[in-house]
Each structure stands twice: as C-alpha cells, then as structure tokens.
Length: 193
Image (tube, rainbow, N blue to C red):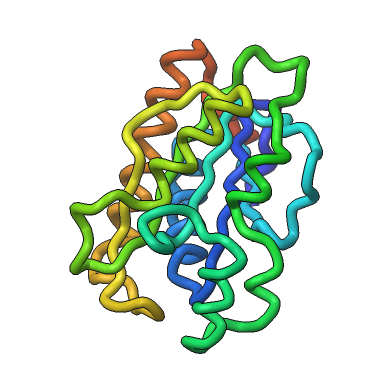
C-alpha cells in the first residue's frame, strides 16, 4: 500500500437506508482517491454532529424521500419497508443543519448526490435540498448534483450506476482541484519517479 503525503482532503458523508446510497458513496470515494484526494467515507450515523468539517471538499449523499432529504417520518416509513432500525436515528438533513466548515478553511467546496427510484428520475431529489443546506452552512457548491438510480425503494441499483458514480466523482475532483489550485496527493511511488 502506498503512503500518501499531504494533499487535498475529502469527506464523504452518506445516509443509506437499504445500502444503495452507501454503495454509491463508496464508488464516489474511489473516484476521489483515484483523482489524488485523501478520502474519509462515513455513514451519517457515525459522524459527530456539530464538529467543523476540516476538508477541502465535502461530498454528501442521501436517498430521496418524498422528493427531498429524509425526515424522521419518512425514515420510519423506510423501517416499515424493511430498513434496519438503527438507520432511522439521524439523517443527512439533521447533520447538515449542524455542520459548518472549519473556520481556518477558505469556503470549502461541497458536492451533493442522491439516489432515487428510476420511475421518478426527472423529479426533484434529495440532492437539491442538500445543496441548499450546504450553501446555507458556508460550503461553496461545486459541480452538478449527481442522481443515481435504483430499481425500487429497497433497490437494487440500476446496472452501471457505481461506475457512473466513480466518473462523477472524478469530474468533481478535477473541478475542485482547478478552482482551488490544489495538486493531487502524491504517493511515495510518485516521488521516486
């Protein structure tokens, strides 16, 4: 495994009721790593509320519930459809409301994505609300929101969506690096060549 020197950092925070959004978040993380970012990927349930975000890029993703981010009521509905009970404790909406950039960073960038059922692909999704909340909390939006499709509420993901998520993340990474004049993290192997 290659050790990384200091480079641009990304934090990927996701909410996932049935595992589909988590799979997209992991593919997004892979795309960011491939683009030279040091990445932390975490479930919103495992991310402390109110702690300043000290990353160059925040990426948030959530399933679409009633054309927006989940609420306690919509998470309870997901439980009735088979989601695990501990997935209803906290959602991305609550996490974003309490998040803020580390004050030492100059307007860190934020990218958003959602998962949504294929049959409503053209209707508003969770990403739109997540983008507004991130902007309100002091993050500067970067790139177009990603929308990744599932066949039904519990999934599975449509074919090719994880590959599409990796490509979306690579595009976000390029834009972030260009806008901030950052260089990708270099590995020890890079330093030797």
